[in-house]
Each structure stands twice: as structure tokens, then as C-alpha cells.
Length: 265
Image (cartoon, rainbow, N blue to C red; front, side):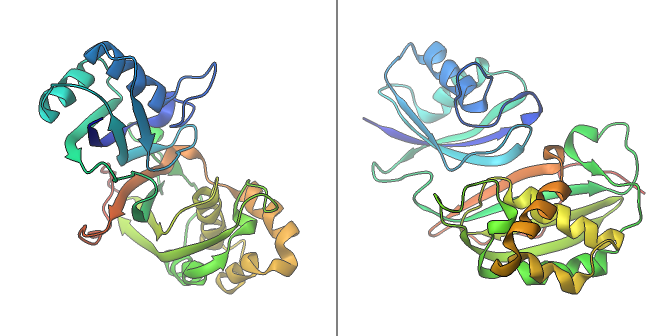
């Protein structure tokens, strides 16, 4: 069966995440329906590079699609898009080797979080507005503690008894663009709610509620239970989070950090 590589963008506000669920509207479910309606095929397989939670967006989610069709990739893309709602868009469709796997072959994943330092009339679905002043310097200093292969048990809602909480974080960047503070996290993979809890801790550092030097304590297994409760309480809302990109072997490194919207001071 031919295999295609899909690059997909979506606004996750109205969806219960990426993965198909019973009695819930999901991004994968909408694409699955669109493939059926646009091709007339009922037998195919669609796999994403990973899950995104309810309300989380994607700039370049990657999936592979196994589908018998005579349609050229570009025509297939247009036909699927014709059946999709306006908040989901297939950016590209290309032929892929049969052994290509959207999830297993990924070597690095990149998430972007957007914090707005002012109230915005247009960007609310895509930012977290924080009223209090934030120290970007303190957030940068704290972010350095999260880099490396470490135990992120305190930052996940997964059960550490059932799933490894060891994650390799390659970089945590904190930048500014107009009224936006941008936090970009790159790593091997991410645990359930991990990035949102990391951002929440960094925001608490920025507000002065946590000292920047204390961020490393969240990775100390001796304090995992208390740290987990604190990180959960501080978790950033889904609205500001984007799956920015997935990198595969041979892909170019990620470019400079950039916002998805413009919000001036």
C-alpha cells in the first residue's frame, strides 16, 4: 500500500486533541473523515508523529497515511482539504518510503509557547495573558535547569509506574517579540502535559514566586510528590501551546524562534 507523508496545521481550540476518541471531536478524526469522503476509500491507516492535548495547536504536525489511490500527492492534498473544516489544513502531501514512520522516525520535536504581556482583542485563542510583570532574565536562568536527559516526573500527568519519565530536552529558549514572551522547548519526546507545566513553572519564576535557582528542585526525585502537585497547579493553559515542528534524520536544524501572531506593546 502506498505511504504518504502529511504536514498538517490546525487550531486546536475546538478539538479534544489529536487522537481519535469516542464521543469527542478530534483533529485525527476530522482528517480520517475527510480522507474517506474525498477518496471513497474505507481501508487506510493514518498515524501522527505524536498526540497533542485538547486545545493545543500545531504549525507542522506530521502524519503518515497508508492509502490505495491513483491520485497524485498534490491532488490528494487539495481533495482532502476540500473536506476539512477551516481550522485544519494539510500543508503538504508527499510520497514516503514504506518504512517511514511519522512517530518512530522522529529525532526531535519542538513546541512553542506564547505568553502575552498585555490584554489582546485578537490573539486570545493563541496566547496566555499574564497581567503581572515578568522577568525574562529570571525565566532564562531557570530554563537552563531543564536541559539534558533528566527525570521529568514532576511535570507529567502520566503514571511514572507505567511509563518512563526520562526525557532528553535539547534546548529551552526564552525570547521576546513585541508584547509576546516566547518559550520554545526542543527534545526527544514529551510527556503528557509536560511542556505546559514547564511553562507554568517558568512563569512563576518570572513573577518572582519561585527563585530561578529553585527550578532545578522540580527535577529532584526526593521532592517529586510535592513538586508534581506544585507543577500541576501552575500548569499553563492549552491556548498558548503549539506543536511547532518535527525533525527527521537529514532535516535542517530548527530556525530562529518566531511568534505565530503579532502583538505589539
